[in-house]
Length: 394
Image 1 (spheres, rainbow, N blue to C red):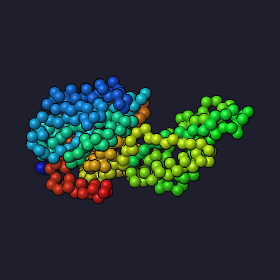
Image 2 (cartoon, one colour):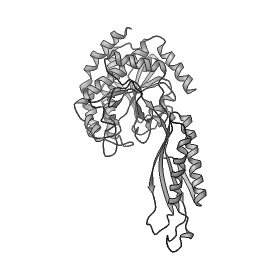
Image 3 (cartoon, rainbow, N blue to C red):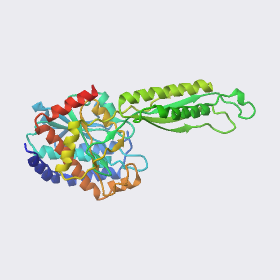
Image 4 (cartoon, one colour):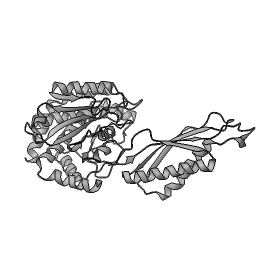
């Protein structure tokens, strides 16, 4: 099918559902729920999809407040499957400052648009509700539980301060290090103590000294979460919390292991012990293949959406763990006209509540629907992307 023909069809049909989807998005925006608590959002979206004859499984593969939505009778045709990812968690204090209330409904609107535009669409379009992107890493849990098995590719769009066909996304982990020493009076008998805060300080210094010897893609940022009780008491326990990041899971694991050695060395030097653990799963980098990048740029050009020509970093996201399994598309869609308003800020949350959300919802759904149509109807394109993805992921 000619690109212009399915572009025109998508552009027309998306208007049939935008107001209904915007109503759901606005409701979720005004009732923000942080990671792991998305009861209202999950219920709201799944009830909406039931009205459009989707069969709902919730929770999906055992992950709380997740869901799988499959159009009734679609499974009878044994078609290859697409996973459209639907996020809906918020941030503490600033609410939907990442725009998940709208980005989740972008996937819903794209699915409804494709189903109506192409009754004989050659792929099954499933919507997978993925809670906890900000903290719990719902996509990691769904992936680990087999929730993405059997899918050809996954796609979603993320709100951003500009249009971005693809993001640079780093792999990230977390490391909580707690040092255990021995309490003593800091004046009367300091020699009897073993200072856990000194161990934390030494750990920080070791990491700072290591920075000049790590590859440029690696990052380490941390805070002291427990530094003791009173100056007059040698701290018996002290803790810090770090996010290590790297451009690949391979480099992240190398960095993580070097950080462990620094912590163990700090413990030896201060005659303390250290306890190291992660509170959340590691999330992977997100890879966009050369052919995938070209396709996404052409889609933005076709839709006449101006976009950044430079590489833009999003930080990290659990969508990378879906990409470990299947090609995953994750473009950024501009909301508002001010590129200086950044994600996770109160100003960005205000934009999500504004009238600008409607245009962003439409543009995001057009991009996601267009990329699905492109991969479904362009002969051999998906095969090339899958081969490039396989070569990178091994």
